[in-house]
Amino acid sequence: MIKFLDLQAVNMQYQAEIEDSLLRVFRSGWYLLGNEVKTFEKNLSSYIGTPNAIGVANGLDALRLIFRAYIELGVMSEGDEVIVPANTYIASILAISDNGLVPVLCEPDLETYNIDINNIESLITSKTKAILIVHLYGRAVFSEKLVQLAKKYELKIVEDNAQAIGAEWNGIKTGKLGDAAGFSFYPGKNLGALGDGGAVTCNDVELASTIRALANYGSNQKYVNTYQGLNSRLDEIQAAVLDVKIKYLDDENNVRRKIAERYNKEIRNSKIILPAAPQDGGEHVWHVYVIRCQERDLLQQFLMEHGIQSLIHYPIPPHKQKAYASLNNLIFPISEKIHGEVLSLPLSPVVTEAEVSYVIEILNKF
Ligand SMILES: *Cc1c(COP(=O)(O)O)cnc(C)c1O
Image 1 (cartoon, rainbow, N blue to C red):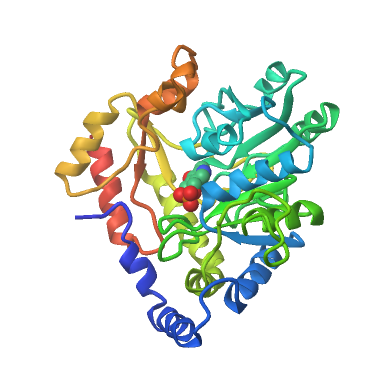
Image 2: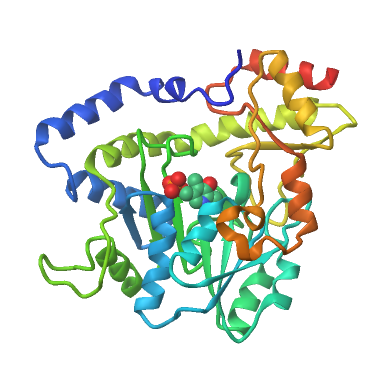
């Protein structure tokens, strides 16, 4: 059986180093807001190139806290609108609506699966305050046009960088492109912890200190509460593990690229649409390798019969979810097409050449 993602094998690559870190934290007697988190934040901020990085409990919180901070700072207020791609993972949308902001869904581009920047301007109203771009599947999305739009209408650009850590656009890392970015260290992400974890990066110092306070009960000074905050902390154990793994992130992303390159070159089947090559200065770190097929469910079954696990990212678009009943009547033909046809193939730093060859052979037989 070829697993979609063998997390145990991914982490066992660094067994000795990770076990040392776990033991170090255990024996230190210090488990929250200590040196491990400080060190990881420093290494993350120098990796991304932003002056600020704040460890938080998970990726959803990272995004929620960014919008919450903008509200506390008076940049946004309840009822304001945030433009977001219609085909993103639900967490992007939750981060908006959880703050009393209104998600305004934007159709993606059928080639890149990322937000179609040409569709944004027509969605901007007097209430629009931000564009939440999502580097979906690991593919960076950005452009001069987006920057111009944000300038013209005074909008914040927030990045959902949960899937694209390590990717660059014209030499700038995702996470540094916009005004603030949310990261997820969910175990299956390109930089995965041994549990939940997340971070925010940003250039603005005031925004960073507001987020840091909000994540710690609304307090920057013990027992002095400036905001009605929450408890959203990256713990020392996760930070120590992430600090081991971040050193290998570029190497792992390169392995992902090599596998994607083979899939791109060697899958030859007229029923299967391969992902478009990166373009316009944007890189891909292949968080997932997503193909499209009109007979997607049959193809998934065929792969399973041949011992190959695949996943669907994602089966139901956010506007068709019961949780967003008020959006259920909206129609987004491109998103709906994507959700109906996408399938993600096994791709990770530990998938072998032989496994890749076998997946290709089976796909070409479908
Ligand atoms: C994983 C993910 C999140 C949420 O991250 P968690 O750490 O699971 O909360 C947000 N957005 C996208 C696009 C994701 O893939």
